[in-house]
Length: 159
Picture 1: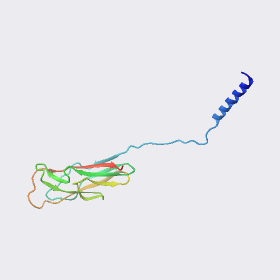
Picture 2: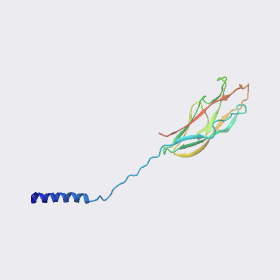
Picture 3: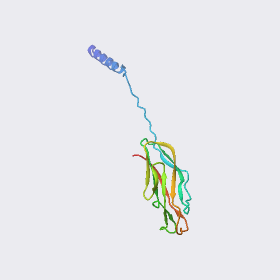
Picture 4: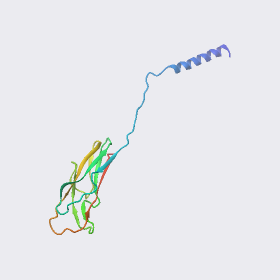
């Protein structure tokens, strides 16, 4: 190699080494993590014996424990298999309507249509009583047999 080529090569190598030797004055590290969404309900009881003859007045049928960690909040909903009536298992036309109350959002409402209550923040273990109102039986004969309805409680994060 001639002297000119050696000089150019040395200059090029030193230039590259110099460029790599300079460090940045700042650098960023991004930290992140993920928490899975948890929206669930638990009931203190799965069964309640209703007093069809004497009625029910704000009787707590279960305590619903709500848990939802969605930062936008959640909705708790109630629906009825028999559209808000106790129904005689032997004769479906024998029915007694009732209402429910739940927290401050649902007060003495029929379950002829689903009812819901919205919360604007997250919670861990919010225990709320589900209450039942059913008028006393005051006239005529009440059909013998088992009367029933099933209330479904559900929870969903606000979308």
